[in-house]
Image (cartoon, rainbow, N blue to C red; front, side, top):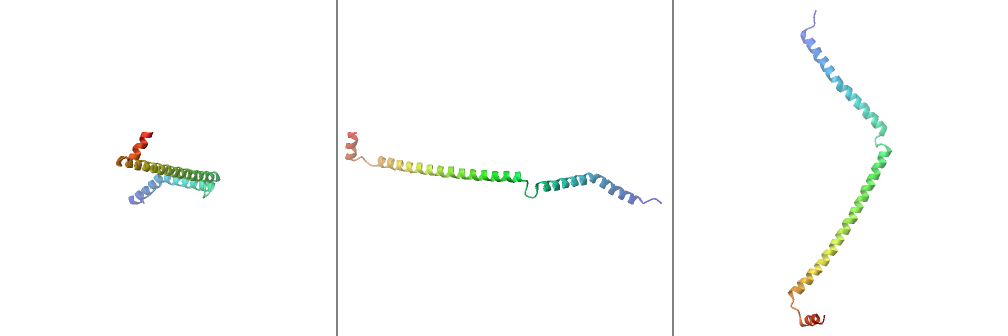
Length: 112
């Protein structure tokens, strides 16, 4: 007695699917193995050399932040001094531009 065609088709479908998916399962297994080996090798935190490199990078970033802050504060102070000087110059110009010279100013100018 021969098996029905339906059963043969079903076995063929499952067999073909298993055959086509087997490389995917193999690759998945290999990748899981490599991941486990890497986690055992470096541990959860990472290797000591990696931790030291991260510590040095963090220290360097902190130093760069400090330097940038100092330059920013110096620039702001210099800008404030320039603004103050410019304000004084503008006041002098506006005062001399809009006030008529007095006779005392004229005499002092003549003496020079």
